[in-house]
Length: 182
Image 1 (cartoon, rainbow, N blue to C red):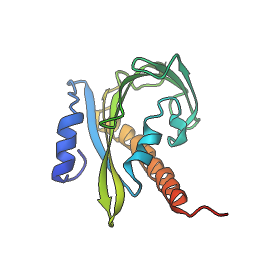
Image 2 (cartoon, rainbow, N blue to C red):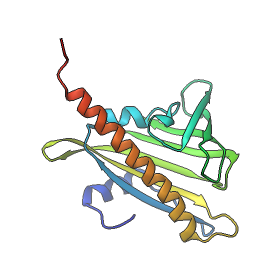
Image 3 (cartoon, rainbow, N blue to C red):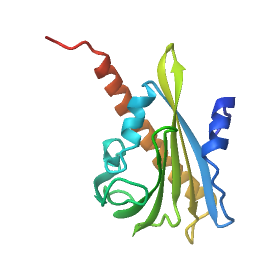
């Protein structure tokens, strides 16, 4: 986990983010506080079929079959990254606990055996409903790279995604709070 954590964060990590990394893998856990209610943030995160709603590096997503555990999505990655496609399987989608887990099962990239878990937890920020989002991952360290390099790269991508999730969620929260014009 990057930096220090609060007791509730540690409890959520223990409960939902227990991914064990082998010697040839790296893992990390990142945290983002978002000034938007959990139901709004979760409505974006849970959309396995629409990751591009908040993930800026995804240009296209096609899901094969129903949106259920085991569903597979084919994601096209925007240029500028060392990847073009990613094939990902939905491992967990728990709307009660707000848990989503995805495993990369193929594609044109170097993230082998990548698995992530993202959770959303209600919190109060400045007296208003907010959301604590926690994302953890584990991935193989590619040949020619170190654990630190691999973790740094993946953490940078996740930080971008979480910042974008916060931006989109907070913008929607402000829009939803505006009174309707007549």
